[in-house]
Image 1 (cartoon, helix red, strand yellow):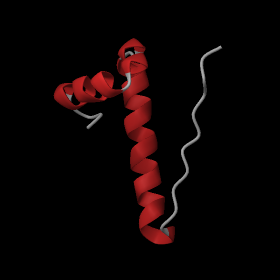
Image 2 (tube, helix red, strand yellow; image 1 turned 135 degrees about the horizontal axis):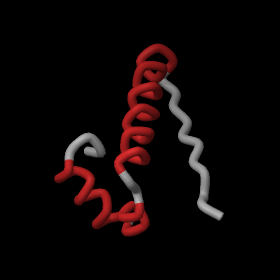
Image 3 (cartoon, one colour; image 1 turned 180 degrees about the vertical axis):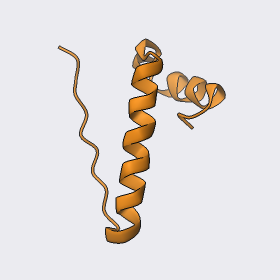
Image 4 (cartoon, rainbow, N blue to C red; image 1 turned 120 degrees about the vertical axis):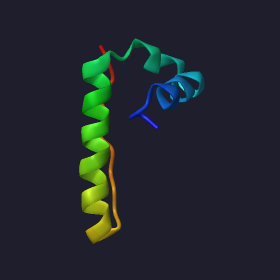
Length: 54
């Protein structure tokens, strides 16, 4: 969902704080999800580590 404008809009409806994300933030989210999906195929485990803004 994060890869498309429509998907991002839906995510922002659910989590309004995501409206503050810029293009670089969304690219980082997509890259992280892709990396986790690659690992999850082999180990069936995923963990998300997020930084909470100060």
